[in-house]
Image (cartoon, rainbow, N blue to C red; front, top):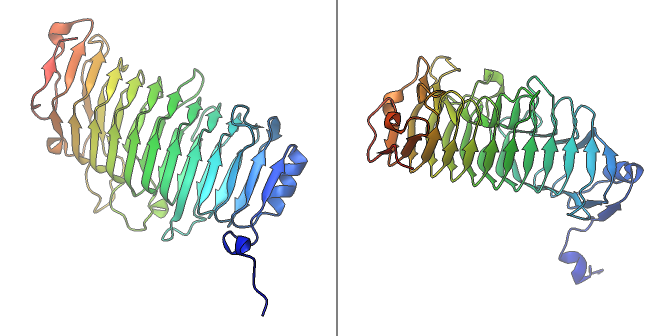
Length: 347
């Protein structure tokens, strides 16, 4: 009987590390991928348009974290379909006309793709207008996006459609003139158990954070979900500028806690219902607690923009600090329910 060496038993039998230093070398590596492979890419400029399907436990990363490879132009820089255990680390993409990076479940809406890590990735200049996203994720679970930077996009900075058990942490979102930037991070289409924390937003679009959204019924994950999003936590972020700080759009349960909001352009919150199919829950059950809001009363005439078919009476406001810098005496907000323990007009 022939026995395998212990070293082979301890690691994937066919996994390999591909050291890449040219576009041709990258193409060759991607043609020969196996489960568990690592692709390390040297500094330099590379074309976009890379598609990977059905490879598990794949890592694609810079060989030098301080000098990430730069994927320029094209329609999409990278598109991954049904790649569980995927890691993307220290990459730079820019100038795509559609999405920067796209990850999906291949349309198998009842079979989410597990365990994705996106870390130290920079995405910029996407679109510039229309429904085109910096990072688009559909049907993923156990997802972490950490220490990434996204600047200038058309649709969403990050778009989650039917994603669950996800964390976005330590990221920076910066809007640019000339880009439509409908929302920053958005969680919709049946998304649930999402945390976005310790991020910084600067002029990050019409809705810098959107819990919920508007999704065609054929795209919900899981199929048959009756909520755009639920159990969304937005905490310990700094949100400066933008049309508002956050929009709650068809969300069934969310928390907005410990955030610092500075100088929104028109409102602080929007409470909306854009999916109105039979049986869908109205926007409801949001806790707003322990935040600091600094704004200009000349711009913010109403703190909350409330649309029809919502349940603003289910919102709770607790222990927030409100300051209209240009008119401190007018700092007390007009809210859909009475706040508990708020502080008004003090720096």
